Length: 481
Image 1 (cartoon, rainbow, N blue to C red):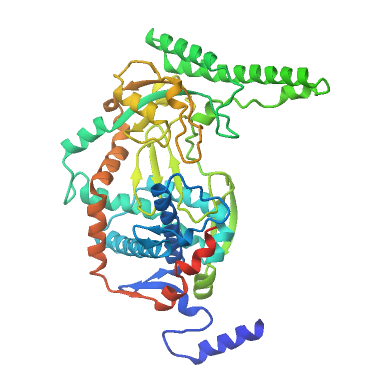
Image 2: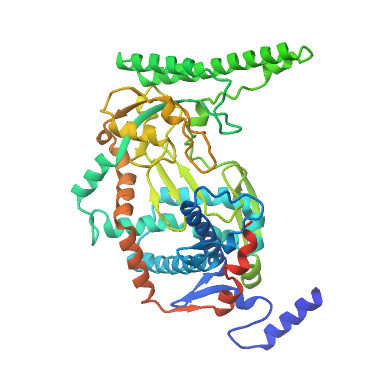
C-alpha cells in the first residue's frame, strides 16, 4: 500500500496537468461553477435522495403492493413510462441543477438563511448523518457534504421569502396570504385515547373502548363548562397511567387463571395502553446527546480533498433510517410548528404537534397546527371534523371512523377516540411567519423551480465527466434493497 501511495505521489509531483485521472483526484469535485467547486459528496447525496424519491413516487402510484416481499425488485419497475433508474437519474439531474443555482443565487442576492432555520437543518443533519455515517461514507458522502445538502431547506426558504415574501420583487399579496392562513390552517388542542397496539399497529383488544368514550365525553362536558385545557390535560395524563395499570392487572389475572404456574411478575409487565407521549411528539429542539465523529469524505471527497471533518452526530438513532429513501424530520414548537420534508421535491409544510410541558398554566402551550387535507398526523375523519367544527366547541370524533386502516399495510396506529377544540388561529401571531412561508411555498414552488432552472442556464458550469460516469444511479443501486 505504501509503495502504491509513493507511486501516486510521484506521479502528482511529476505532472503539471490540471486534470488528473489517477489516485482519485479526478473525482474531487462534481462540478465547478464560475470557478467554485461543488463537492462530489453533495452530488452523490442528491443521487441517493433521488432514489428515495423514486421509491416514494412509485409507492404512491402503487399503494397496495408490498415491496418487502421476497423477489420484489425496484429496478424493474417503471414510473411515468420511465425505468426506475432513469426516472431517478432525471430527478437527480434536476435537483443538482437546483442546488447549484441556489448557491449562486444566495451570493448574488446577498441572502442569508435565518439562524433558526439553519439550526433546524443542522439538527436534522446531525440525526441522520450520525446514524448513517458508515453507510454514507461508504458511498462517498462525507460530513460536510451531508450538512450542505440538509441546509438546502433553509436556503430555499430564505430565497423564496426574499422573492415572494413581503417587500419581495414578486411578493404574494397580503390579502391572499391572509385568506390561506385562515382557511387552510387550523389551531386546535387535541387528545387521543389510542385504541392501537403500539407493537402491532392493530386494534388492541385488551382495551375497553367504552372506558375511553366515557372519559372523552366527561372531558368534553368539563371543557364546555369552562374548565381549562391545562387541567384537562393533567387529568388525561394521570388517567392513562392509571388505566394502563388496570389493564395490566386484568391481563395478569387472566394469565394466572389460565396458567396456575404463571408468575405474578406478569403484573409488572408494561401495558400496551398508549400514553400521551405516543400521541404527542416532544418538541424539544435542544440538540441531542452528541458524540464526536471524525470523518473524511469517502471515495471521491476523501481521496481528492484529504479532508478531515469533525462533526457531531446524534446518538438518537430511532428517528433515522438507513434506507435510500429521503428523510423527513418534524420540528415543532409553540411558535414554530414546521415540518421539513425531503421527498425529492424540496417542499416545506407547516403542520405538526406541540406538546412542550408548560412551566406555567397556559392553555396556549397545547395549541397545534393542523393543515387542511393533511392526514400525516391524524386520521382523515379527525382532520375533516376539525375543519367542520366551529371555534370553541369541544368535539369528540366517532371512534368507528378512526378505526379504518389508513395505509397499504392495514395499519391502525391512528385509531382512537379523539377530543379536540378548534380555536381562532388569528390570535397566534407568533405562528404567522412560518405559516406565511408555507403558503408561499405552496403557491410558488413551481415558479421558483422554473426560476432556478433558468438561472442555472446562465451560469458557467463545468460538470466533471469522471464523476458523472462513476456515480450513476445504476452504480448506486446497492443502496436499495
